[in-house]
Image (tube, rainbow, N blue to C red; front, side, top):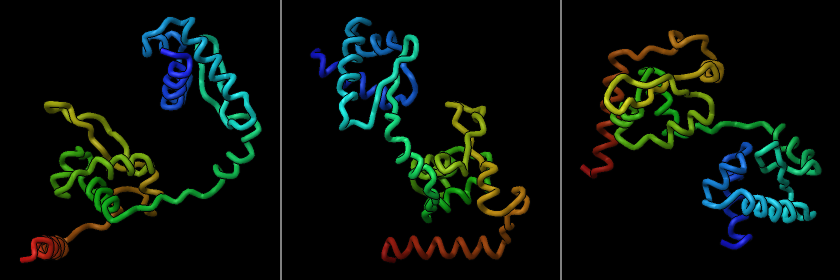
Length: 189
């Protein structure tokens, strides 16, 4: 492998990991010796030292990590201070409602209720801090259990799950009728 190819692999690993990675671990991952990996690191350092790069590489004992150059901090602060608004789409709201009312619940149970794959929705809710992993179900495969977080309570202005509106029998029937109507429209019945 060329120096450029090895450096590209090291760069990809460091970028993906985010944290520092031991040089010996890099060597094992790319099946190269430590001396060769150090030459890839030196190549990256030279590349990042150019003024047209906002990225740097730091060495921490026996590890390396990608970092932002100090000259770029003021721009990072501006973007970090910008308010972040989590946009909850209909599918995210639907998934969040199911988790809130049925927790602890597995992803598969959410999918059975929704009738569609819910991987993306659950992952986004975890990213937004509204849902968290609560543990594992004591069943074959040990699937993850999900539930809401304190951030969920803050975001929706409730102190506890008991304050969530209850769903009455009339509402359940209305929901069923609405779901059947939507299915019929999709099937052109």
